[in-house]
Image (cartoon, rainbow, N blue to C red; front, side):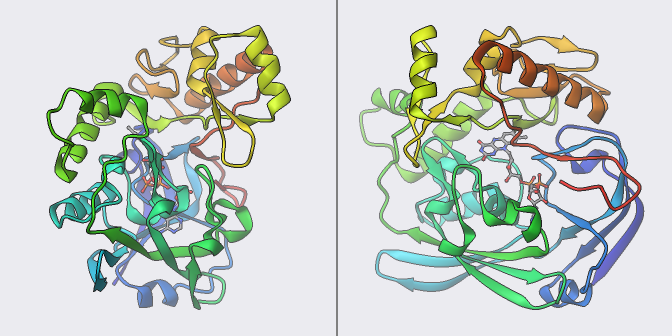
Length: 344
Ligand SMILES: Cc1cc2nc3c(=O)[nH]c(=O)nc-3n(C[C@H](O)[C@H](O)[C@H](O)COP(=O)(O)OP(=O)(O)OC[C@H]3O[C@@H](n4cnc5c(N)ncnc54)[C@H](O)[C@@H]3O)c2cc1C
């Protein structure tokens, strides 16, 4: 079935709590329903749970949203189990199901908001894990032709919070299912320092469900709950710079945290720089930087998308002036437009 909702209210569809409307929202139940909407010649934006979106204002473009649910075991042999989840499955429900089924690989990604299809777009990550570590392939529909296409993990082009699906020329592909390979053997991933410290006092190595509960407890203590304080998690990605830039910054700021990045570059802590630039806990109008985690921009109540963007711009400008490093939003900003220029 296909549901077409004109002038759709978006307040309940974005965790920032921005009160905006979309010209039209189309929800579909199956791959066939989605294919029947092709060819979509007008620009569209596919949304998930809205936990990584910022609506600058009312959206003049058609929004699509999946209602493809279900998790199927498609291969079960030896140590590995291959499962295929519908794009609309709530990510943390999937993690809960995997842990209850004694399948390892996604437990460190517990409680990340949003849906499974978006998890594969964003390459979500936390506490030393990324979803790409378990992804086998991603099924899509090309909304220009209506054809289905399977992307292997390699074709997904995964990197830090990056995939081919984030490229503007690839927005034509809507994810319908994500296939993941989980393990029957569990070895706790304690590569993240704070997680390791929390488990050090335990008399036994943490079980799979211990890990899920520890991660959930840690996240609740650090991050604002969007139900009470609107936000979209980390507003910026951690910038990756070349070694010379990293060395220059280290000489000037000896306490600056730096980490080796995959591609030979050096990853900096955006939160640390934002805090040093004096933004932690600072509020402008109805929006501001969270007082317990400088990477998060929050809506203190009634903020417009433009107010949040103004805070983000001021943060970028001050960090640039102080460190010479340009922060990039992780959040997908959807500009307000009544025409085809509305894009994310
Ligand atoms: C409190 C909080 C904590 C967070 N913590 C983390 C964290 O630890 N790690 C992390 O990585 N992220 C984190 N996030 C960000 C967010 O949860 C993830 O980015 C999540 O994957 C977004 O899922 P969503 O369903 O809400 O997607 P949306 O925000 O609705 O969309 C995200 C992107 O995916 C695209 N998209 C959605 N569905 C589809 C589809 N079916 N096909 C094609 N494209 C699609 C959208 O166009 C958009 O570009 C956090 C957010 C919050 C609010």
